Amino acid sequence: MVQFLSGAWALLLGMMLLMVGNGIQGTLLGIRGAIEGFSTVEMSFVMSAYFLGFLGGSRMAPEMIRRVGHVRVFAALASFISAVLILYPTFTDPWAWTVGRIIIGFCFSGVYVTAESWLNNSVTNENRGQALSLYMIVQMAGVVAAQGLLVTADPSGFVLFVIPSVLVSISFAPILLSISPTPAFDTTKPMTLRELVRISPLASVGMLLLGGVFAAQFGMASVYGAEAGLSIAQISIFIASFYISATVVQYPLGWISDRMDRRLLILVVAAVGGAGALIPVLVGADFVLLLVSAALIGGMSNPLYSLLIAYTNDFLESDDMAAASGGLVFINGLGAIAGPLVTGWVMGVAGPEGFFAVIAVLLLAMAGYAGYRMTQRASVPVEDTGSYAPILPTASPVAVEVAQEYAIETAQEDEEDPEAA
Image (cartoon, rainbow, N blue to C red; front, side):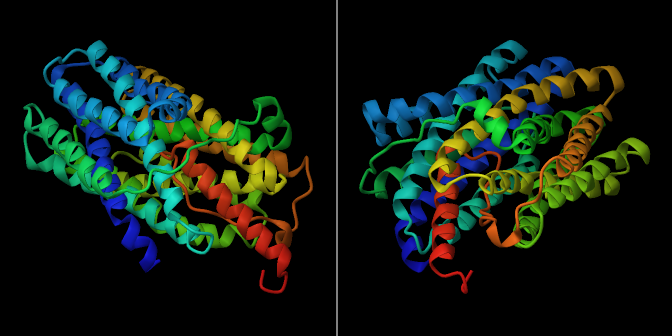
């Protein structure tokens, strides 16, 4: 790990700064949109646009990298991110913001693909799992730190938009000045959706629902906070709760998942998250209860991404795992595009509590479907299941493929040494 850190510290530092910039812009737009008088439905289009751009970027960035190289793609896309962040307060119009979010989602996706391919080039078979864990922690730390910046200036001004723009610009330096050599780049062709659904209906449906859950909490949580009358400090703490709990719970759930029927764990985790989302709907929006609800939602929903990937791998040969990951990322992206739109519509009809109602319905539907699937297929013996690798819903297909490579290597090691496994 020390050797990995000595070669990858600049990449990790740059990615943390990028995550700070990304983490603050979504929250800030939700707050600023309320100040500007944008409706919940208008803000839902703004928030959904990011995931539309992100999905497009994940499909197009690999070809861009093959044509002009990592360095040029990274520098160009990161420059666009910095520029769009500055333009948000200049053009305070929901449709201008929607276009900006598409651009910024596309660019962040391309930046992640580029940086994560560098990450993959920096790891070895021995430290791949540790590298993934460290990368996930860095991402979470960046998002959480971003929420603390919200209280440093007035969201109705320009300063809070300038800060992430500067941070994104600074993030170029450690990465571009120290990452060497430029890795060869290739991605696996995704498995067809029909084949993926046939192999793992639960993972396919679960990824679609989970995309909606994650997009709602990443895009609409600040809109909820503004609609519910929370202060800026309360909104920042509220949103940070989603990600702090996800970091804390990720590893214990991963340990458990390698020792029991993953379908049952998916059912329990989704049910607990859904029940947590019902707390503000049934009990009320007391701030302490909001934090409990956010912690339960974030702590349960974020690890579900890794759980569903690991569960899919249990039914795949090693050669098919990377292809399946591309299909799962695409399905998750479709759910992410729809999530804010549905959430915004429900909030417009039912009020701010609609935010939690949508998340509750999606998670409880996942739990119910997991229970149904348990009656349709025999469970995979625990000793035959693959390893759990921590990965976030914000990851690009490259990071998911890195996680798949870790699962493949672990499976091969287990086959060679069953007693160690």
